Length: 240
Image (tube, rainbow, N blue to C red; front, side, top):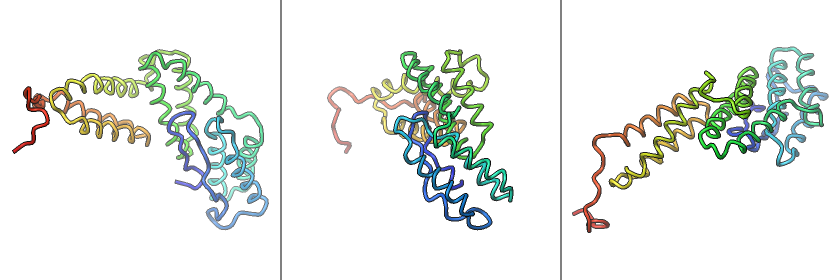
């Protein structure tokens, strides 16, 4: 992972920032003075973005291109990349900002539907890892799907959304089965730990592993060996 890519972009609207210092060294040696000055301006601009601004996706992707071009010895491409980042920092309209705002508005609009909002949020959870990897095609695919979902498209009719639909359905089933599990004497912490692990895996872009973790939780909740509810009057007694 590069210096330019460490961002907290798990869900749209999360705070994103380029870590500093960005200068130091690039692969192959120190940055030329003119590029150092531009990188400093980009770094300062990202730090000073308004708190309500979307994560600086376009800027970070431009910085990925900048680093890759410098490492490959393509100074003209590097200059174009840093200039693109600088333009976005200093006021040029960024298409990524516009897309992110639309998705955020869609999440708010879909809140009442519950499941659709969760599916859209799960879709956006994949944005951060793709930005961190400098995967522009992946970022565009994620945002394209998110925009369609935010516009009200049925996620079950979107092939790319089906993994998120499955995950949301399993999460809903966990929530439905949990009360009976607790009433029968089950330890909520066991399921909470599994759900927490699934959430962290989702945030890391590891959706298949997250779904497997949920499957483990569901296997416990659906197990024939369910915990026995305490007999009346036994609550709180210590085991001998």
